[in-house]
Image (cartoon, rainbow, N blue to C red; front, side, top):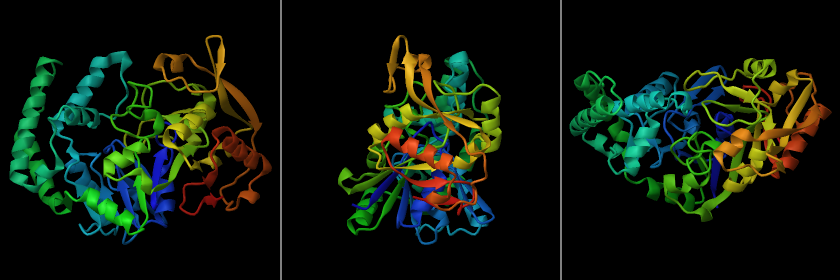
Length: 427
C-alpha cells in the first residue's frame, strides 16, 4: 500500500512544502491533486529558495516523476513562469518527469476578473480569496462549461476558446457587476496560445493509468494537497473556504486511484495557528502577541504576500482534522518561533453559549461565537534551531510537543525547528 497523502491540518500555510520535501526523499513520484496557483509551497535547498504554486515540490529531487492532477485548475501563464523559474535554477523540467492531466481545467483571464468582481460585491462579507480565478474556474467545471487543459493540445483553437471565454465573462462583468470588461482580448489570447505551445508536450490523458501503474509496481506515490482541512469546500466553514477538496479524499478523486493503496495520511500543523483571508478563527490574537508571532514567524503569504492572522494552537481543530482525514501522523512546523514566548497557550475546548464543547462546531456562525478555553504551558525561551534529536529539546518544549500529541490523538513524526532543510527533528 504505497501511497502517502499529505494534507494541511489547519487553515493552510502550515509548511506543507517542508514536509513534502522530507517525504519526497522516500518517494518515486509526487502529485498535486487539487487547487491552483492560490497555493504556495516554499522549499529551501542550500542557498536556493524554490517558491512553487503549481508544480509539485518534489520537482527539486532529481529523477522524481511530478504530476499535476485532474482535480487541479491551472493558469497556463503562471505554470510557464514557474517552469522557467525552475529551469533557471537548474532543475530538470523535461516532459519525461513532469506530466499535466489533460482533464484538469484552465483558469482564464475572465475567471480572474470575475473572482475580483465577486469579492467586491461581497463588500464587508468578502471571503478573502487570492483573486487568482480559482473559484470561478471550479464553478465553470461544476456547471460543465469549463475549458479543459486538453484544449491546449491544439494551440490555435485554444486561443479562440480563450477569446470566447473572455467575451462570456465580459458579458457577466458588464451586466451583473456593472464593471469594465477585460481589455485586449486578442493580446491575452495570443499569450495563452503561446503558453499552450510550451505546455502541450507535458499534457497527457493517461494520469489515472500512470498513477495506478506506479502504485501497482509497489513504488511510493506522495500526494500533495493544497490549502488546509479547515478550507475544504465540504468540511470547512462555508463560505470561507477554497473551491476544492483540501482533505485526504480529494487525493483519490483528483488523481484517480482507490483507497486500498493508502497507508499514510500525514497532517501538517504549525506549533501555533495562522489564517489568511476572512472567516472564523477562535484563537486569533489581535494584539501585540499576535503581531510579534507574525514578525518572528515571517507570516506573510507565499502567493499573495498578505500578512497572516496569527493565534495560539487550537487542539479542537486538530482533532477534527484527524477525524475527517484519518490522519496517521502529524508533522509539527515552526516550533522554534515559540522559543520567544514566556507562556504558551493551547485551546483544548470552546465555550459556546452556556456549553463547554470539545468538538469543533460545523456551523459557521457558531464557530464565530466559540470562545477558546486555554491550557497554559511554560515556554522554554532558548534557541532550539540547532536541535536534531527529540531528547535534546528543552524539557518544556518536549512537554509542549507531548501535549499536542495527547490532545490530537495522533503521533508527531517530524518537527521543524528552523527554515533550513536540515533543521528538523525526526521522531
